[in-house]
Length: 387
Ligand code: MG
Image 1 (cartoon, rainbow, N blue to C red):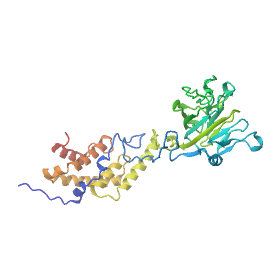
Image 2: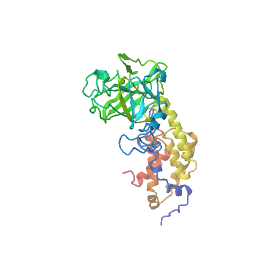
Image 3: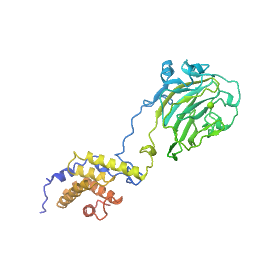
Image 4: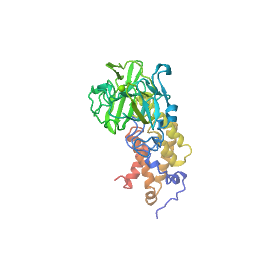
């Protein structure tokens, strides 16, 4: 009669209680020189929760509301650029909108912003007099002074890089999606400022603009921005933050429902979204690896081993490796002592460990000659679990 050992080993007991995530510890393609996380990596932080507005165009929960239709929000968020004694009129808030009139000068936010998502709605009261750039001209100026043109060119030809939805002096809109004068128009703008450091253009910046829901700028390179008959060379530092401002071009224009949200930082600013440099990737991988190892500190047995093995996806730590190597070697020794029927009950856990070691070998983290992995492979193969 065959002898079936009674399973009392603490290691084997814990082998049967591997956490839900441990078997998923090794995700898709591993971290590499430019990607600190694996594909589908469960250690990658969850995005923050944002409650969207009730309908498209309403401010989401994390937006900075710059004008909600009230006089109070107008007064607490905006200021005239020109001193009072230098202007002939004032911007006002009434009937749920802000009104800019000729002689009031620009108005700007009291707060400063960097890269941002901006929602803003505007309208002309009615069909306006004037032609070309002289009909309903205003403008939405993003931080640093690049303008998205506001104009009544519904039926009023002018130079295309100065029509509504143009990045003024840089790029015409891809389409004229204006509604007729007198109706409310909307802009949704995603602004990424140019980043120039030590004379080197690290990112030329971009603007995406939706006019009334239609894409009219699609990651348009900013090229330093433009002005009237001018290009602005991209050879000097672009401000990291600045106010948002609205133009007085001598024509009355209404604005309402204005809100802004900051965007996540880019890799050139130390952010981790996107393809990272090798140096930044290595630093981030070391950080993630340390966090994963720290999270293993209160675990026991095979749960701990699996979590420590997971950390090797990011970087190699010799102390953790000693712990893993010892526990893996012990576990395999104990598995070898099990009879087939007992071993069969451990299939899931054995395969978790087998797959973890295979993953690390496949991506070169541990040697292809690592003997315990070979032994585990042999056990799994003999049980017919590799088919
Ligand atoms: Mg303008």
